[in-house]
Image (spheres, rainbow, N blue to C red):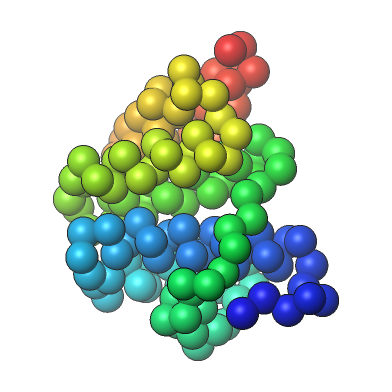
Length: 143
């Protein structure tokens, strides 16, 4: 449960981890590769593995907090797309979830599909996160 004294950044991070967990569970289960991926994202941002597991086990009453700028939004959408690709199978419900979350984060519907496709293609082509981010953000600025 969120503490009254948690920073907005901590609330956003927990919300992001919950979004990743929701995407991973959309096919009915959270497999070990997906959990490992979520844990690596959380650890990269300073969370402990046991805290991530606890958060995902008890996340039904947590209010989601969305990022407020394009860089944070991009990073969260990127992590969602990586999660979608983690098990090697992309089903329609996972793709719809990514598109829906990206729209809820504030990206316009007109660009969400292209953004997710650019990230997906970049990851599959072995581009670095920064290369994909540079290309995607320049695309978003043109829109």
